[in-house]
Length: 128
Figure 1 (tube, rainbow, N blue to C red):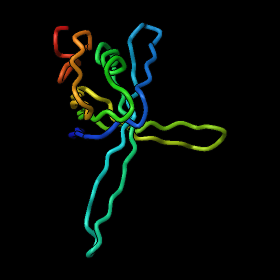
Figure 2: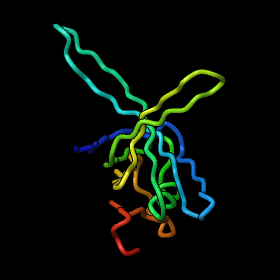
Figure 3: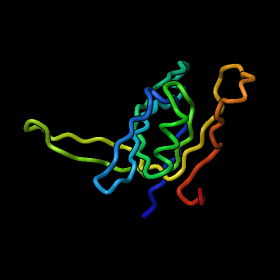
Figure 4: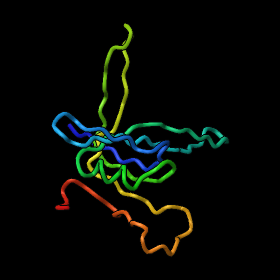
């Protein structure tokens, strides 16, 4: 079987980080992905809201550099979570990310030398 997904979208809110009992960082990166398609003569647009889950150093990097409105490319695998809440069965699809690429901000560049610059791409495979 093959399970791989690549999405480009904008963050709908700032990433949320938490830590497992073992001390591993886990961040949730919520994004909105817009799609356009033609139906007859009419051009339609739909938006998919999906969470990406990021682990380890990559999770900490995401919470440090990303914020609401920022564009990202997320590559990973799709997972469905199922649970029961107040007697009702719930489910949710999310992306378990193994690679996140940060796109440049759309605001003008400032000449502030103290401003931190995020990496273009970060994976857990890199040694830092």
